[in-house]
Image (cartoon, rainbow, N blue to C red; front, side, top):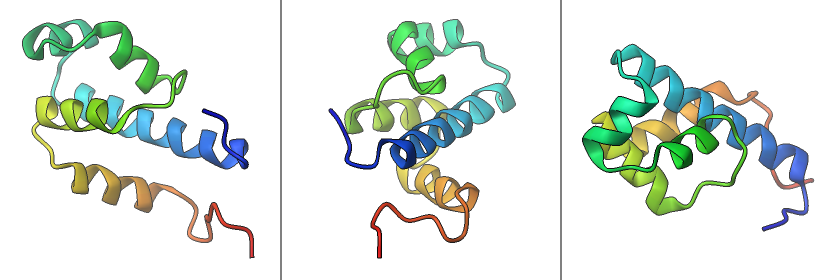
Amino acid sequence: MQHSNSKKARIIFETLGLIIKEERVKQGKSQRVLAYEFDIQKSMLSRIENAINEPKLISIMTICEALGIKPSELFKRLEEKLPEDFSLIES
């Protein structure tokens, strides 16, 4: 899926992947262990953490459940890490 503002979308996906990776590492789990324990494709987890693919909502929710965090917490962290004046909509 192409976004009209792909540079800004890329920032979102990179930040999202970083937050997921930080949480996974904080819990002391490798991608392989997390994927195995919760029946998640390791390759999908890797692609999301490295912002290679645009994650589907169901994938984000599955990863959140595996990490024991609410999707709302993930998005809160995302908002906090993005620049204060970040916007996808040009004014």
